[in-house]
Image 1 (cartoon, one colour):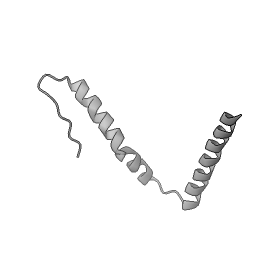
Image 2 (cartoon, one colour):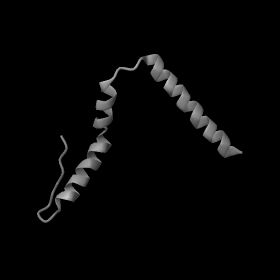
Image 3 (cartoon, one colour):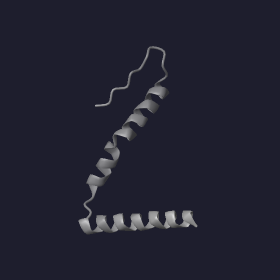
Image 4 (cartoon, one colour):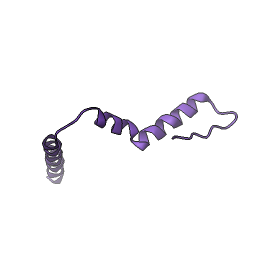
Length: 64
C-alpha cells in the first residue's frame, strides 16, 4: 500500500504527482502488464539475446 504524506496546505495536484511517481518506482504496473499475457521462455530468451546484440553494436560504434 502506498502512503503519500499530504500536509495541510498542499495542493491535490502535488499529491497526485507524488503518487504517480511512487507507483512507477514500485514496478507494480509493469508486473501487471507482464502477467496479462504468457510469453514462451524461448521467446523471452530470444528477446534477451537480441537486446544484448543491440547493446553490443552500440558499444562497438562508440569505440570507433
